[in-house]
Amino acid sequence: MPHTGKKIYFASDVHLGAPYIKNPREHEKRFVRWLDSIKNDAAEVYLLGDIFDFWWEYKRVVPRGFTRTLGKIAELTDAGIPVHFFIGNHDIWIWDYLPAETGIILHKAPYQTTLQGQTFYMTHGDGLGDPNKLFQFVRSAFHSRFMQRMFATFVHPNWAMWIGYKWSGNSRMKESDKNHAYLGENKEHLVVYTKE
Image (cartoon, rainbow, N blue to C red; front, top):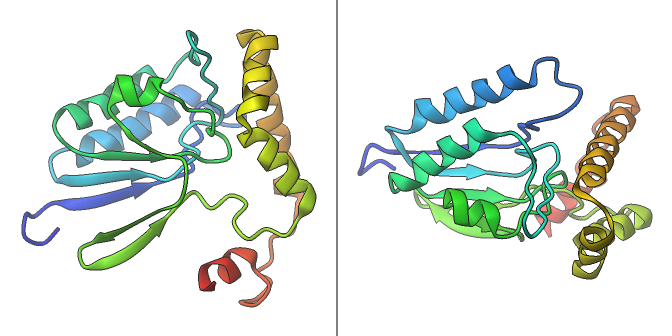
């Protein structure tokens, strides 16, 4: 922001805890070092989804790990720096723990705001405009409060974490096998969605 000398920072797809990352602890430390490096000149921070490779909160149980990250985010918010956290497709099951413990502003839907005189429409982007019916069905099941309650009621946290990381790893492998050639302005669903 020009009048204050402060900056606005954005990050996404950090995927903390991902099983395919060679050194997860160093990966997290690197992200925390970045957060620490911006604390003196940050006006706001926008974390745009998939910060965690998998996150599932039970009422009284949260995922193990990420202590450094959670502490650093809390340090930023305690200093009065707004930290906006957008759910991604890997960390959609965030409820009240992260906002209460770290002070984040949680966004579960696209968010529009004006920053430095420019309009920003922010979201993780997963599924926006995607015509794939199977994908839309799976996505709606993951976002269903009923399905989430059923999962939390009948699946022990140890199994939930195993399932989550297994699903994430399989999803990543399938994506890496695909040819992601740009289809053109009129065929890329995110471009079409943005124009609409």
